[in-house]
Length: 422
Ligand code: CAA
Image (cartoon, rainbow, N blue to C red; front, top):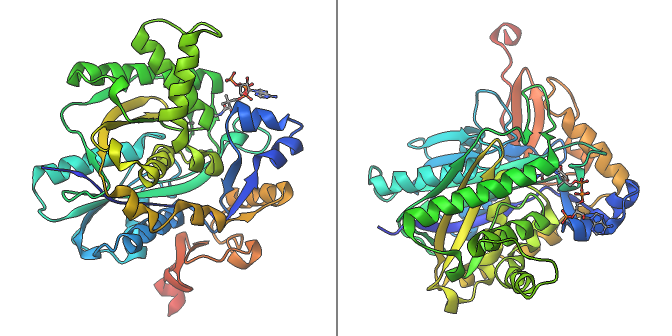
């Protein structure tokens, strides 16, 4: 059975900030953010754009762009680090906002940035099991990465969502299912306690944890399949910031050759050239959106599919997912020959061009407002206050119920308790 992606789409908040401006406001050399981290712009979510809104937008765009019949969807999984409720999953809000069929399973998965990859695995296994013939799975990665103003993590924030449709009639990507590469280890590199809206990270340690997990997952994959990375047409990594993918690729090549690269050596030059060929061309969206945790890897995948040269479609690509804490997975797939033609009908660049640039002051106000957006009976989520014009909107929490609107109509609303209505 062939299992893969029949659609992929993404969403970003309405606003963004330039890293150049942010660096200047923080008295940092802009080259640190632009060259040192590889980030050019960063998406900023307003109080009216939560994880549900971003997920619904990405999924709605997928359904429209790829002309998908809603009645075919039998599974909706949302992978997220930035959920909106301790009990109710983002997936069931999205299911309702999109008007999906009730004969459908919905749930949410958490493991830092790995959640959507876990969802993808569940979808693959579900389709392979043959229990729901003809049904398709909607896997959505949706996140708002928050470290807070003035922190070391601030330039690695971001917000957005990637939606993917998994089915047994793939037209974009076909997954290889002959083995698996997985790794887990308890580490305190990045976490977010229930009382905090902002993540805690041991930044430099987290980079090392990521690189160890990469080697672990890759080694597990090569033992399981015998495949080696040198045959891959492209290597995609989890991208908390673009420079991390560079560090990852070099570590992978060092592991393959069994020795570190020496400074200014021909071997290092060759590795840098390889990065320029097989990794960096796929990171443009990441550089302009920032970290979207669960979706960062799949933003790179979307860009790769759109640009893919069909002549390389006989070679595999790799996907490496890292979830702090930690767990990691290496998998491979093939990009199908017609994929880029399907993607080109809805170019990603248009989504980014539609964004509105914020000043640092506006960004700081939005960050502060978004931090209060979950408070009960607050009026912070008024779209007019923030100038947000979108099809899906979060309108705040009233009577302890989250309110959402689709195309100007409130479709999830706090019910007035019977005693007050009488
Ligand atoms: N010009 C050019 N480059 C410069 C520069 C300048 N003027 N000044 C500094 N740089 C370079 C540095 O040399 C460094 O590059 P290298 O790592 O290649 O040496 C880079 O800019 C960053 O500089 P610092 O290491 O000094 O930056 P920092 O200490 O302020 O923080 C960080 C960097 C640790 C990534 C921080 O942003 C952070 O904590 N981010 C959140 C955690 C994170 O993203 N971890 C990634 C792995 S964990 C994961 O992947 C899960 C997840 O999504 C969170």
